[in-house]
Length: 246
Image (cartoon, rainbow, N blue to C red; front, side, top):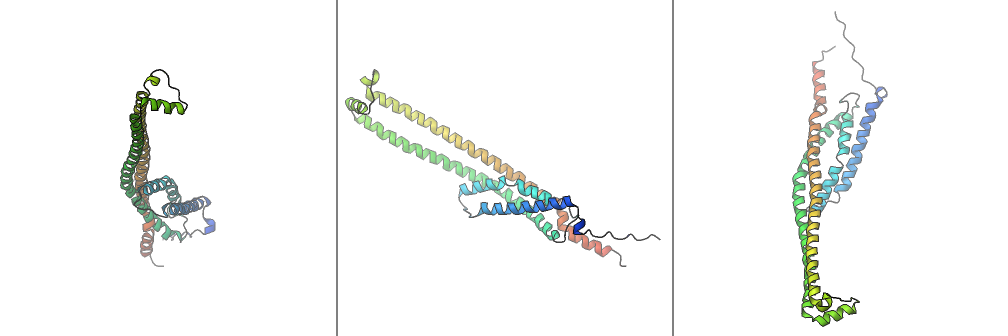
């Protein structure tokens, strides 16, 4: 007859290895700190504001590595050396991983939409500012056209400007020529500013949207890998039913 093997006793808290327990508590701590940080980011909410939505998305995505590390530390070692209170917590966190992954994936279309809206608003703002400056230049140009050469010369001399050469002979033409060059430089600066803002916006959008996409799939994959946490109780109950009675 084969002698029945005695059941291995459940390790007491004092006999648990120090390293995995420390790693898991570090993960819980990181998760709590991240939750508090996300709370301060999301409140007070300003929905329908594309600037707030875009910047909030960036702030969330920039902090994703912390909860990723927290999940890796918390789920380390599966069910080995776990306390009883951790079993429902692990199941809950497994589902939270999937929900957070879906949330990150949903940020991608929102980020793309807000990128287009912010780009349109930025271009309109620059164009409106340029139009206002052109109106001021046009008003000044009209004053020059209405004034005589002697009036322009006298005005410039009253401002301490001494005219020489061609400028002294035709001050009106010289000023109109300088105004024309000034408008051309303004147009060049406007195009440069538009390109600069568009590039900065697109770089941030590409970085944050791609990061949200990758992070979303990673959290969903964590949910998939932690199916043991969601089915641990079920497996234990099956094992207890199949165990022969004494």
